[in-house]
Image 1 (cartoon, rainbow, N blue to C red):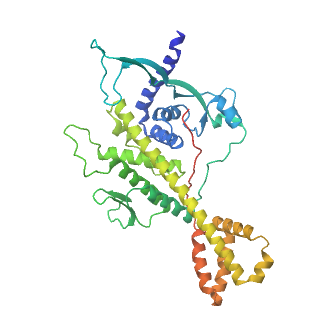
Image 2 (cartoon, one colour):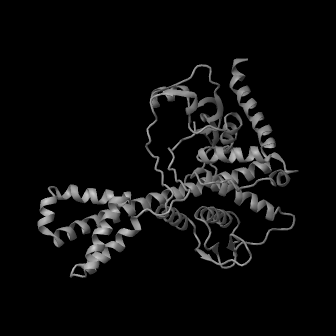
Image 3 (cartoon, rainbow, N blue to C red):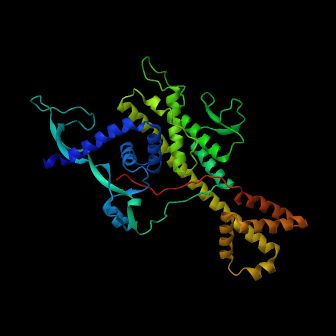
Length: 404
């Protein structure tokens, strides 16, 4: 029966989803799904599960024709497609009661029957589509558009941590936590505390974990207490959610996740029905996706702000060089605009050229002449651009992907 072919395909894949959700709550499979979700955080819950079940190492998927036309790549012969669900809503004309546009009341005919009118409504529907991962294709190199890696030095760590602080709706501060905890969210004072003097990686991971608690589990004082018999999330359940969101976000940004443990997942999920488990997974997916989008936005803001500061400082340095040694400046600089552009690039690079600026200015400070004060101020402004001791944090602004 050809008319049932698409229905049968959708039913087959949704049945697989039911089984997949039940099997998901094994430690390894659960982490696998979270990793997949970190790469496809804009995708639906169902499709992230389907991708994880069929090709957990997928990083970028598209249809057969899309690979050819949009990316100039060809799916390798013999590759097995990843089957996911794509929305295919359709319009349908239905007869409905006619209502007064001002009052909303149903209009009646003289004989007492209701007046009718034909309206076009959109019916939800899905179909099974085949997509392939980039690893299953060959051809033109993918553009790096939208990919911006922040290497792990202190300056960029500080930028990433500032992005977290801007994303978090409550204050986030360092303190000495005597209990031994790495951090906590204070429900009454509505603030996040992070243990001071931890490694940079641990600081980032703890901050994201506590931000997840704040987002999902903050108590609203104006909200009524749960009614008797209403399900209340256990402490273990809250940890599952916060740990899962933090793991997903860390995976998305390439932050070391070796110490995350989900050994308790199977016990937490035991006895729960599929709809309840699916609701929990969707809560985790939604929270992680929203936080990633906000963090990405603030990183872009901070990059733009840093770029503007570098340009402003480059102009100051160029002005100072001309004022301090006008004859030497005239001999060395032919194109002033090009000189400022190069100074800006050197500042953003934060390497030997920027260090050379500091060394040059320091000599002027050491000489103690009339320009020493200005030189000292310029050194202080250059220093935040300098690269310092590296750490293992990488921020990836991944290519925006829309659901197939």
